[in-house]
Image (cartoon, rainbow over all chains, first blue to last red; front, side, top):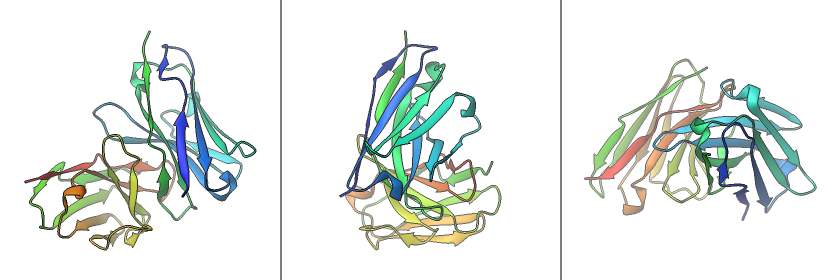
Length: 117
Length: 107
């Protein structure tokens, strides 16, 4: 069974960079599109961005601060979110997508990242 | 961007009954809609994609319908494990967006 697992620091200071990794098992990263999604406390889901076939597309609201990349040799997807504030406190999920015409078929359990000094 | 509006925000239904959840897009998105189930501490689960195609392993009690701007998720004969929060999402264009969620509660 394909698994996705997010990992990274649980606490990040304001103005610093939030860095998360999604480790993939049960399939090559090259077979899928890769998305990051977050859920702030008490709120709904927000799409952060996507990595697909060597390209990326980001949520305009976050575009200036985000980088998503893939290391196929390690089967990992990375998210970097720069200049964080308390508003970036959220559960962060990675999720795979088989292609453009599909939903997000496999998600990690998510990791809660708190931005606080 | 295309906004997704779900209704109702909260739905109270008795076990064994049917639940109908709605999602409206601010512009036509063809059938590029997915539905997800979220439970605390668990990975979100894809239920429906392409507006009406059940994802692998999803019970036939879950069905989706709609096209264009109006979409529906129907859960027949509710089981205890179905009480959760449900989100619709479009993937027609970037940025993808989600509805604000419907909390399905036991009546």
